[in-house]
Length: 168
Image (cartoon, rainbow, N blue to C red; front, side, top):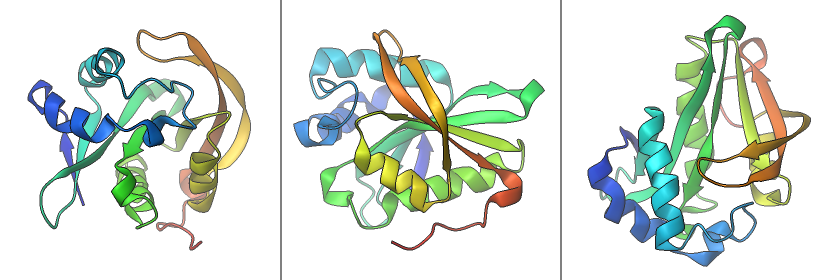
C-alpha cells in the first residue's frame, strides 16, 4: 500500500472508488457516492494539504483516501480521518496499515492523535478500537461544505501507541 499526496488530477480515479453506496452506508454523509457531493469532499481534501490517495502497491490502482487535518501545534495534536477504502479492500488489513503508517509519522511530531468517527459508523468504530484508540467523547463535526453530523471522538497518545495494529 502506498500513500500519495492527493492532487486535483486524481479526481476521476478516486471518484471511481468512491462511487459505491456501500462505502458510505454507515457514514454520516451517506450521499457522498454522488458526483456533486463527492466533488465538494474532494475539493476540501485537496485544500486541506494533508490528504492522500491510497494505492494498492501490487497494481498501483487507487483504493481509497485518508488525511491529516486540524494540526494544533500548541496542543501537540493532529487529527487523522476522512478515510475510506474500496469495498474490495475491506478486511484485508489495509485500513490498519494506513493508520499505522500515519500514526508512526504523526508521533514523530505530535503527542496526540484524534479521530472523528460517525456516531452510526460501527465498522469504523470497531476498526479504530483495534488499533488502540480510545473513545473520549462526542462532537458535532461540520465536514467541508456539509452540515454538522454527530461524531464520536477517539484519541491515541504517543506514549501508549504500540506501533502496530491489534489483531482482530
